[in-house]
Length: 508
Image (cartoon, rainbow, N blue to C red; front, top):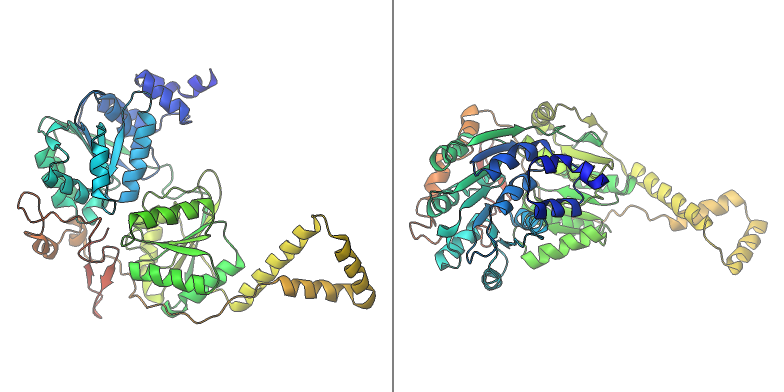
């Protein structure tokens, strides 16, 4: 009965018994504010705009009414969830499958980088819900392996992220091909002007639900910044890892090239690290994530987009090797640590020209970061010595071989005990590796200074001109799969010129 008492709010929402059974089996304790508000309207078939940060429970908020409105015996998919990245698509699909397990509702993730033949075979099993990235969904539309005219519910998850990634025209094309008589639910942390046009054009008297996260940043995450020159960043990172070895750590880099170079350089310095970015094949990405979750590797080096949807409870450290372009990305990054009630620490490397950008981030998070000095080799060595002491103390608690005790006794008779222990510590100590590495410099991040750019949702005329005739499904231009074959490096934010002007490249 205790479980039912904990789930009282879910029972009050009049959710189908099969879904309540799934909720209880998943260990949910109580409905979150966004679930309380969205579920009743979703069950009633209303269009909904949900404005909420990551971690508020929005996936279950839209999944519960979505599952309720599905018919088990339908031959075609009836529901569609569009997500910005493969990782998020997989994560959402997994949650829908858990919530729908007792009703018999299944979802299928559709994303670039995976064999499309495998996805077509999966579609023959008649999943009721498709969770897809826009580019790959458009591929299936062209092939007629998915029939959008049978879909009566569409969810746009992390719509602002899809906007920033250049998916807006694909979304418009998809919404134009699903039935007009449908339910549309849009979820976004922010609501830029470009998204409002989607609302006006494709949604019917939507109900707005705005829920703020309890804290913009989690209270048990300690935030620090280190002011350091670009060429000193890597040694500073290595020294921090030597001083305070993480249980698991994520290092965020701005570009794919940066991730590759950092991963190789960390490996050269003796750290167990692997990279994650959008150019990697899906099989390889899955392999890296599995290694990280199991603790086979200690350090994951990733771009923002590649780490989207990554949910690992034991991440103790986050390193912003490069500051993100916007505050929301910063919040998302540091939120990878301090999970499941554990404490965490987030370090940000800030070049002198990025101090203004740091202040912008602090203003949004409403929590100043603590400044820390640039770590030195001596401090890194001291950290290694401390680890050696810990190893020696741990060995004392274990059963010791009689022969070793005999050798120790003989050594004690001929040598000073303190000198013996010091010698043992020196042997155990793994001194910081200083092998030379190559890290290509990146230009500093600049804060946005012109409000007009922000009000346009980051969708400049230049970008629209670049995309004309460039793959829209209706125009027969090929509808390129941004997840699988990106035209450009979509993780890259390229800065040009001495004036601080900026050209943003698309990313996956």
